[in-house]
Amino acid sequence: MQRGHETDLLQMISDYMENGFLENIIDMFRHDASLYLLVGKLIQDTRVRVRLGVTALMEELKEKDRGHVILAQENLLPLLYHPDAVVRGDAANLVGLVGDSTSLPRLKELTEDENGNVRIIAREAVQALESDPAQ
Image (cartoon, rainbow, N blue to C red; front, side, top):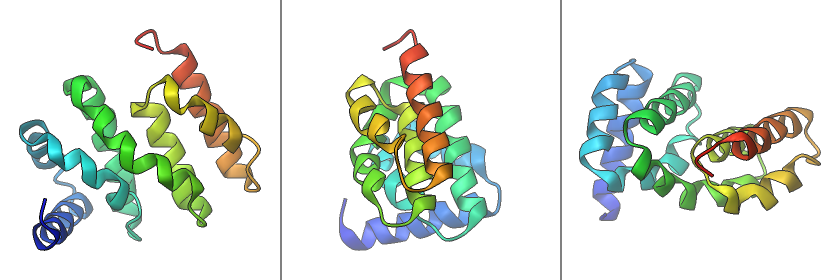
């Protein structure tokens, strides 16, 4: 994905997300799996509606496009080390949602995070991954 094209896509998807056009975005992701690589950037958006929309998007896609959601993990894992606790927590939530058992060690580290909310989210993500029969 070219840099300018990626920036334009990010802007369009985040604006759609903010305006509640989730179904349109789901269709876009189902038709172009390379968009999963943008999830890490989308979850860092400063707009709450966008971050909530990304979570809703990934929950829907886990059901409708299970074979591709794992593609988002590559760009989410580095965010588990992000200096902003909100980003760490959101990333942990998504890694737990779409990840696989290879992410468990880092999620378990986050259960000792300095931020209480991150610790709670990390514990929930670990439980979700450990109880997922697909793992």
